Image (cartoon, rainbow, N blue to C red; front, side):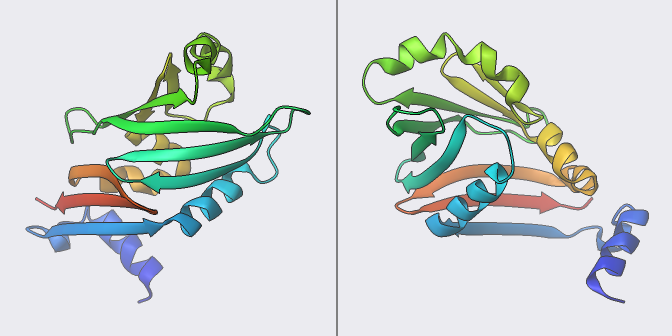
Length: 173
C-alpha cells in the first residue's frame, strides 16, 4: 500500500486506526520557500501584483516588498503582524494587521473593500486587518484537508529572522 492508498484508507475509516494518537510539530519554513510559494501563487494570474518578496522578521512579523504591474509605481513595503492566532476548534481564524511604510496605510485601508472580489476563498480584508478563515482556505485548496482539520488542537504562526514557524498539535480521539 503506497502513501496515497494509506491516506485514502485512513480517511475512509475517519482515522479510527490511529485513535488515541497525538502529533505535535514545529515546522520552520525558510524565506526562499515562502517566496517560491508566493511566486507560484501569482503565476499565470491576472492581478495588479507582479511579485511579492516575503522577509520574515522576529516577533511574528513579515516585511513584504510588493511590486505592482502598474507603471511608474515603486515597490511598496508592507509590514504584516500576526494580531490574533487561531483557536481550534472554537475559532479557527487568524488575523494579520498590515501597514505601509509611511502614512499611506491609513489612506490605502479605505480602498481595501474594492479588493474583496479578487481575494482567495477564506481571505477577507477589513481596513488594516486581513482575516484568514482557515477551514474555508483549506477546503478551497484541498477538500481532503478539511477532514484533517477536525483533529487540530493547536495551530500558530510565528516568525524568526528569515523563517516562518508553524506550531501545530493534532489529536485523534
